[in-house]
Image 1 (tube, rainbow, N blue to C red):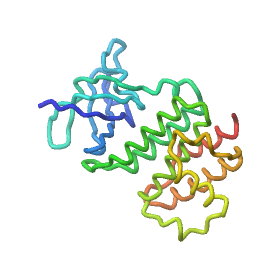
Image 2 (image 1 turned 90 degrees about the vertical axis):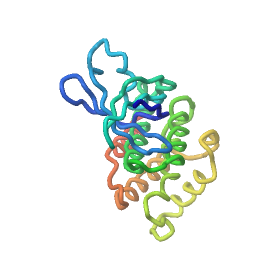
Image 3 (image 1 turned 45 degrees about the vertical axis):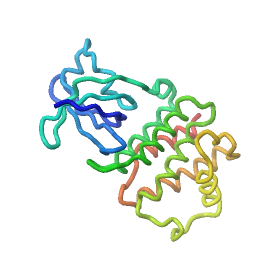
Length: 215
């Protein structure tokens, strides 16, 4: 039986000679693991659907209780700019890694998905620094970590910036007056918070922080 899922591809790994295993994120179902047969072939029609950052209506055939086969996809967004700019790319990759840890199989995660899509859209289309949208997303994800930040020994500067991100939407982030050094320090604190949480270290965040200082 085939079913349609509006989903974001957050992970893709090679499987066998020509297949891929993709992790899809759906607001109602959480993470879905699906096999995409033959998509590593040059002429494969579903090649784009198996790329991380692809958002679309996926058609999946259920093969068992937890097994799915990709049979079709109507792509609605691929966040093209994120693949052509190092800063956008590194910020987007952090979001994919974080959401992969935050979401679970068969669990509703509508808020996390909405926050991720809003942040990715800002990273892809906005003129302001993509690391602002990344910081906004990580800030919005803090309640999912099982950590009460009020109990942590955080600097007053971090708390002030966190309050700004809490109060703003992605469309308003260009209002934030923040230096590159302050933004880097904020992400550094975030990396420590995530590392001490149930999620653990975000390896892509370290890369993004280095990218921030190099541009």
